[in-house]
Image 1 (cartoon, rainbow, N blue to C red):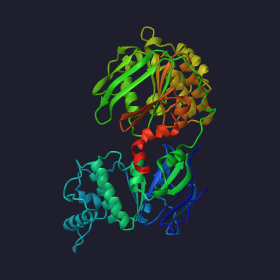
Image 2: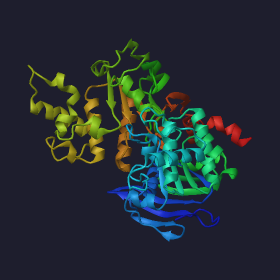
Image 3: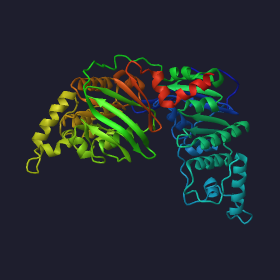
Image 4: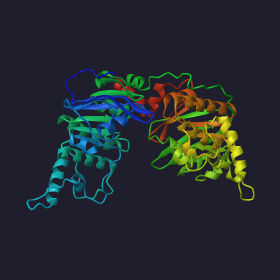
Length: 510
């Protein structure tokens, strides 16, 4: 277990935290030290373990192992209340205030000040709320209802609530994702003021320009493990990115060369207000296009719009040169599109139905004779694809819920491959499955491309994108920020485009 370099006594210290959920190791070495009067950035790829570490500090998860101390005293939080009592407050990206209550009522809910008669004093509540906002330098009316407040104002209210509870540690988890430039600067002004008053602030962000502008130190995590802690003044964007993604593409990605043909999918100017804008995208026969980006970039939303699950405001989608009607899944299927969604259990499968029924769901019209479907015919078709994909099950009649995650994913793939698609959209194709099965899925995708099927692969795992894609399209905050050929796509180039780091590099390095 590595530890941060010693720089005096930390206010909060978490070393070697471990958290598992069944066979899944969410955190193998959660380590961070926060000091009073410091803004400490925590960075890492999706799946690096940041959220699990935050939930341990917030009292939502109890670690299986590790050493957790505040001012040197051992801690063992069993609830969120324990965390708050210890002076820790988490400011989330989208706070959850009670919309029908006033701002002041939201700040003091459950802790309302009382007057001499023992009754709640609304005047005292207003005065104390006004004092909090004055300390933060933010003009918010304590008497206005929370409903209709901007995300930025809601976050300031959560900060005011934390101060009112004497919080000494504030954790800001992706607080700027939904804010405008002016709102971000106001939040940063508040954060710096809190730092000057001695608070310890942990700031989680994928935006490097913000990390370098705001933080005093940076801790990097990767694959659930602590990697390093460095003073921001001594760091570079390139160095942090390399530590975040420092993995080599190996035999896990059996990519074979395929003959790439004409375009099967062409997306032009696709826009959905507030979700994504002006998306241009092309997938050719035999080509694997990796759609990369961080959580919230809009990748899944674009895929859902292409497949007709969601609508869009403007732009066009064409399959094989023919316009595709929007918001119509059946037309997308008829045009030759298959869609393996991110959440296979909720969106890709009907868990209580059999393996055979799930594997043939997209073929109901084809299999039906006079409105009836033969169970034997259904099982024969399902068995054929299950054998091709090496689905491990005792019977085609078993409920799909009895299968492992990897085999469930194969059943979803079987469902769409049985339709003989021209284009297969796969959203996080290997999430939650073991390494061996990942390799099988990668080999299958490579084989399908070799058969001339175009594949649009959405993945948050950089090694998967770099190992499997012929081209990489990178999204950030609802727009395409880079399109890279396989030879151009590196961990650094993809992460730069996914985090706006290309905008920060020049300024930071200057």
